[in-house]
Structures are given as C-alpha cells and as structure tokens.
Image (cartoon, rainbow, N blue to C red; front, side):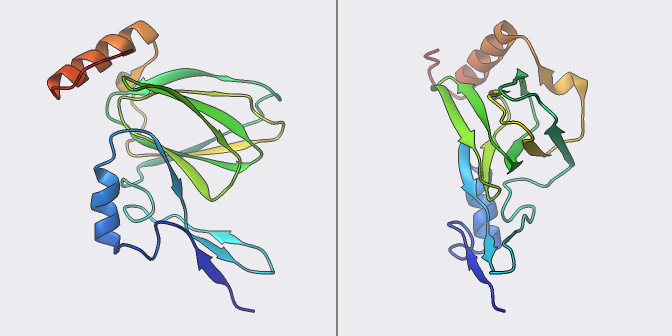
Length: 168
C-alpha cells in the first residue's frame, strides 16, 4: 500500500527556511502538520525545528478533563508551545495586545502555536479529549504568569520595548 503526504507547510520550504519562517512568528496561529494518508490508517509526524517552530524541551498532555471542563489560564515569559488535540476537541483562547481569539482544536494534524508572552486558556473539553502540549523550555515556576493583571502589565512593557502600541 502506498501513502500520500499532505500538509501546507511541508514540501514548500526547506527545513532551514521553515525554521526561520516559523521562528519569526510573534502571534498565535494554526500550523498544519504533515500527514501521510493511507487506507490502513493515517500518520502525522512532528520534527522539531522543521514542523514545530522551536526545539522541543518538554512534552506533556492533558486528559480526563470532565466534558465541558476548563483549565485555568496563564502565560509564559520565555516558553513557547504547540498545542494539539490528539483525541476529541477543546477550545484554546489566546490573548495579546491585538485582542482575544478562540481556536477550536479537533484535528490531530493541526497545532496551535502559542508564542512566549501570550495568555492562553483551555475550555469546552469534549469527554475523553487528549491535549498534547510541546514546549520549548523545561518546567520553570518562575516562567509562569498566572495573574491576569500581572500579564497585562508584562505585555504592555513588552510591547513598549518593541515600539508598538497596546490596545487591550
């Protein structure tokens, strides 16, 4: 049996070009991961610095969240994430100075890239969902921002340092 590779990013740019392109992303966005379609079952792969915009330092997953449940929000000062719904579905709401946007993740080949300095919250989990989170840094309690007020002040300072304006 033969398989067919599909995906928007893969095959268009070389690995180094994709890495440079993805490293320059400043705001959350969806990334379509490469898929190999096969009648025996499909396969999705993730290669760091090629399909993911960072070197992977940590991987964790969230599961057994009650249907309709949510997880508290937070941001990271340095850590970046790629969030994937391996099974089921859930929503991720992200917030930056450009506003708030909610992404419904329900395909195991679509990941949400969450750059450092972005507030994110999980909610509306379907029963038996599994969220895979790939991170650019090992766990560090000091990297977390868990207070929304502290996050707003942090983001305003970050935006000012880059010469931009803060609207929210």
